[in-house]
Amino acid sequence: MAALPEPLLMTVEQFDLLPEREDVLEELHWGHLVTLSRPPAWRVKLQVKLADLLRPVSTGRGYVITELPFRTIAEYDMRAADVAFVSKARWDVVNEGYLAGAPELVIEILSPSNTKSQIREYAALCLANGCEEFWVVADNKKTVTVTDRSGQSVAYSKGMEAPLALFDAASIGVDLIFG
Image (cartoon, rainbow, N blue to C red; front, top):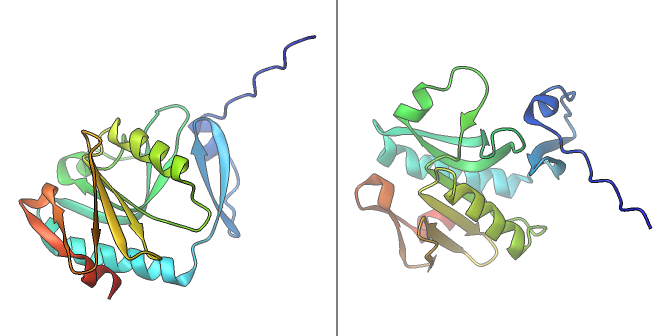
């Protein structure tokens, strides 16, 4: 019996040549095209709220951006962070193309379709490629789980403060995120 041929991997260069679609979002995961539905209003509102809460503590250090495209694996991966923080030094060198490596802070807002293994894989990919903290924001549980580069995760819930290690011990109240 003959072995099945390996599927061809799509490069970022090929991905960039695809026509823009208005009905869905597309990302490139490990060389495979992934089609995502557009986010519902509750998710967009949460993205805006998180960005608004982070901007004052990040002033002068860098930029808080929603839906930031970045390349963790230079040739075969193109993702977009729901909310991200990128240092000024890294942002200033992006002229054309995309941010190389993951942002220093990546915040993923859970969708009902996300699996635990998808989130773990995404966190590991980001943390291995420049990310200092990876947050998972679960609206249904009203929790924020912060994973650092060592792989240690801490979950914060209502009434607690989520520390912002990147911003000199500042913190954000979980109640402010979901309130």
